[in-house]
Length: 341
Ligand SMILES: [Mn+2]
Image (tube, rainbow, N blue to C red; front, side):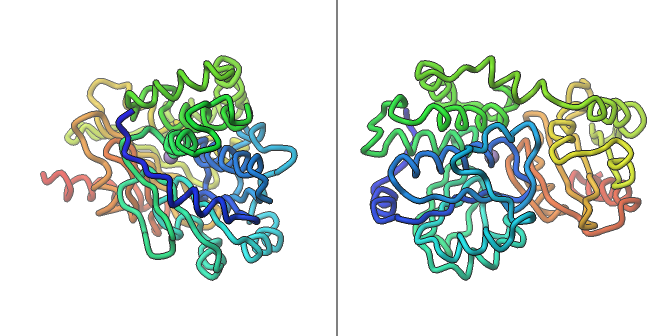
């Protein structure tokens, strides 16, 4: 394993921790939930009183990860309980985001907290000022993978995954599996090493796959069909495809958080498409932007320059504060400016 990860400072921070909060980003995906749960269960095993927190609702298919003994608190649902836990914490572990703004309404309570804060992330560049320690690299598949390699280096684990609770291992596997789209993107040699170690330690990968990928509603499948048949627009000059999903359309398909997860990848299976974009109107009124690309095309800079976001070369996101019916023209304009034609 060639990853350059140093945990001595983190060991010291955790040795002093008594009350911890573990938190990830808004619109949590499998990596956010997986890394949060795994980190929480590890801290609980160390005897730390831990509270698991997410800023907003998580996809139904990940609910099974929420530990009965440490249920994930959703700030949107129980703001008082979450803010009380943050105020009482001496240690806060932040996972799978590059800056506190990704926690939306939790940003302020997190900034105001005097707890020792640690950031564990795999995105491009991290905010550093609020954190006593930042452990970050882009040379891993996911925050869950990075957390796995950190835990393996902790002295109480000492490289033996079996010393971690099985639910922790399952959560780590889930985060890695979902962030790589089941080993399709951003997979490194270390990712397979991690998968191998987790399976050897008892993770049932087939059961997890079923539990995560084969549990959606009929209406979600119909929404996918509708988007592909009636909403996908190809822009041949730029090898681009895009889909715009409005709030009204979401409601007519009984949309649940996470239902459109993965839809943005689908147009990339067309030979001529090298960039895919999904624009989703949110109840808050802004447009959530998801961008994906094939190898050789960078959507990270596109997300950064035109969509108030960023991420990775082949997978990035952002947001737009424009009306949903202005999105198509804005996207076409951004392609023209960015790819210059
Ligand atoms: Mn991630």
